[in-house]
Image (cartoon, rainbow, N blue to C red):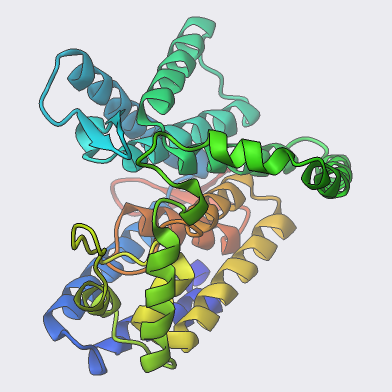
Length: 350
């Protein structure tokens, strides 16, 4: 529990989420969300009892199993293995969603890269096999958010491995160079063609992020009606469904498709302030302690949070990854490994 108590911003965010049962618009929904929140937090705390390498190995096996079973479902023609979205067929496998499967692939790549830099390397055949499988699944899911998060997540591991100082300088130079080149590309009219090419079909519209901007606009209006403490954990999604629907089909959603807007719906601006502190504090801690897996997981959750609710709303697997990433950033560099009798010994952690 030391890591949890040290991560004061996460402690504040957790307390606020649980106390929201007092002002929620739906007590049953919020109680269920609080139970899920607490369970995932306890699971993340328990995971600190083993080294991050062992944790990564177990997680990688799980991710690979999901990916392989999804591929098997696709080639066997199993119903539901593909879904028709934005005018194209997309692979969803056993996750019941292309984005969900895409996130699993990115997580698997992230972990393999982390283990590689820890000196734990699979055989050449196994590595090539899984990379090809990952590439096939990513292509078939056509998940743009998965493509967006791959490079920053892998970069987070690379920049903190080896000579981190020189890599930080190289990364800063590349960032400055990119910022300098962007205005030239914009003046040359290159952005318009790139954006248009990202549309999947005539039924897809990248300029509204497939309708997300409309959801964001309505979410902002609803936040304005209860700006400070929101509608309670997982209550904001209910309010959104009651106040948002598309003009054509009447489709609605519980997700604001943005982690900060969803947090504002649930916990108000106070909650947004707390979650921003969690991100900033944990990123700083991960950089200070050069904890690459922590930084990668936090960046993974944060970037996805710009187009999805991520860790906000009803707690899910993303919350577990986030809690673990934050907590391990505050954990001592030495971790203990426990035997069946609860006796611990210090082991090294990558």
